[in-house]
Image (cartoon, rainbow, N blue to C red; front, side, top):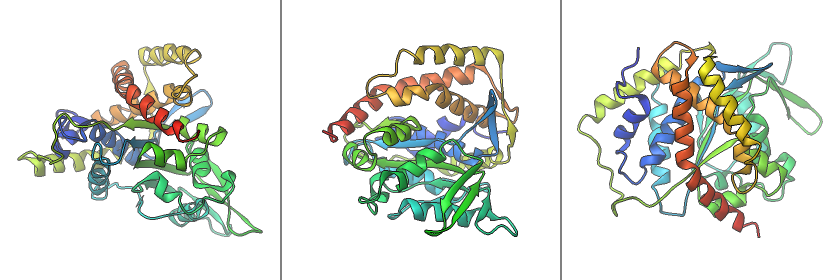
Amino acid sequence: MRKCKEGFTETYVQFAGGEESASGVLHKWVALALLNAVLGRRCWIRCGHQKLYGNRYTLLIGPSGVGAKSQAVTTGRDLLKQAITCPEVFGQGVITGAAFLDRLAKLGTPIPDLPGEYYDASLFFCPDTIGEVTAAEPRLPQERGLIRHLADLYCCPETFPYPMTRRRQGTLRNVCVNLLATDTPTGLGEAVPEGPIGDKFLRSAIVIGASRPKTRSYEVNLPENVGELKEDLLFDLGEVGTLGGEFKVGDDAAQLIKDAAQEVEYLTNGPLGPYRQERPDHTLKLAMALSAAESDEHTVEARHVRRAQEELTAIESGMREALMAMQQGYV
């Protein structure tokens, strides 16, 4: 049973200020990020011999002062912290790649008699800006930086080695990281290195380009029933957070994904190239979140896939602009 009768994302957008607010489209993607965060590593879709988990990296990117990006993230982060099935939320401050892995280790469950072995490390990483958290490691090799670790952790590896000390390795097992962050195109370019590591990270991310509001005011007009909406959202997050196991993909939904994957082969150039390589997986992850927001059926149907595809298509123009602005900083 779900309480958000109009749908989780629609209810969340109303709760956060409405579709016409400065952060309207951003609120929708924050809502989707919250769903994926509570699904964590407990739910998956089987793709051949692999499991596709519902975690996602969501980046709200735009010029400074445009779109109320930080406000959108703060609203979602504060709501998630109140959910009864809330994952660990970590964010503010500068952190190196090594310190980030140490944080994951502390969140995991230690394995008796195996020092340095930790299970089920799960985190909702929600920094103020992605550039800020990488500011502590400008001289580190890219192979040891936070962006590289995030790119490698995106696939929720069953085992992930990390350096405990210079002479000793530890192992994180069953790792799941969800990321929600903001930045300017310049800040993103400074944080994400040009080349294979940067491309791998950007394949893992959905970039939502922030735009100027339809009105000049950034004032948030909350609905009169904001308290009721909040209760419904927290209830549904709690319900989604209790789900576990495999989500089945219906035949029609699978065919839609197959058709979309064939198109990807011809659309891998340009700023959206890395993202398009992962678009079928992004679609499935979104579809799983949309299904979970509706019911406990553990089934991804064609309508969930179509809705996911529509949501992705709607942001791709803004994504292209944001990534082109980011790449200009590389030159």
